[in-house]
Length: 111
Image (tube, rainbow, N blue to C red; front, side):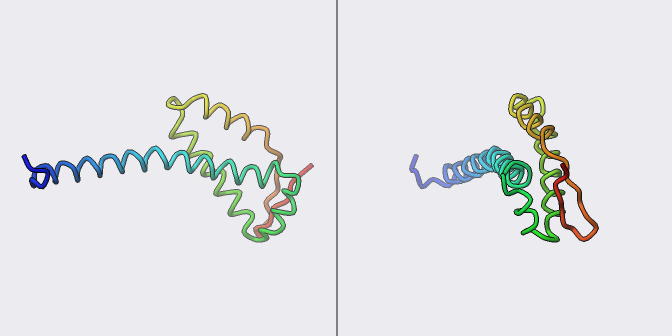
């Protein structure tokens, strides 16, 4: 059979699409985790976290809310599949400082 055979080309297209879907599904979780970790670090761990929150201004509440939603997604979708990773993220999440979200969208760390 020729490599230009239509059947082979169609089968190859399907395989490439399947490989791409597999890559996207696996990579999406990795990207979500990196995003959560980076925002978590900036908002809760960084020595300048309050200044970062202040710089976000009225967007700070949206960022904090997004990161909580992202944590829930990661937790729900990976629990039982990558449990040791989920457990490590849960520990970091539990240890984060309390914050206060103000009506104007700004956020303050509480002591």
